[in-house]
Image (cartoon, rainbow, N blue to C red):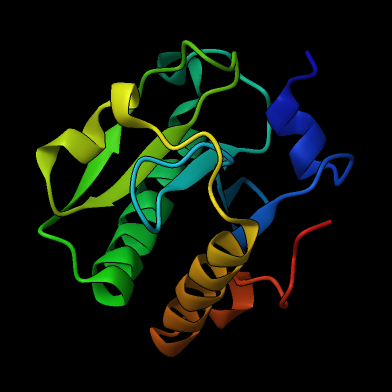
Length: 146
């Protein structure tokens, strides 16, 4: 199955990537809940997160933890929240949202027209933090928008 995420991963559509390995990628969404909002997505287009094989599932959550730690460092939020909804795109993915107010965890408050320059800056900040934390092997070169 081809999804919008498959097309982003393949480079057919632009994406602000902050992580790429052989199983998962992470990139900023185009509709943002809070500064630093990042998606962690398996490369294989599995529709529902509970249908991921055990190895990919464990790896996805390990990467989510690594990126969550980078988001905490880069944006200094109250918390880094996690949303797993899957209704909007039939390709398993995890939303990592560094928030300072609980309202930032609601899709009712999503910013559908964020400033591209701000998104670029946020992606650069996340990549720099991941590199500083020793994860440079999985951090794409800047810029990674296709």
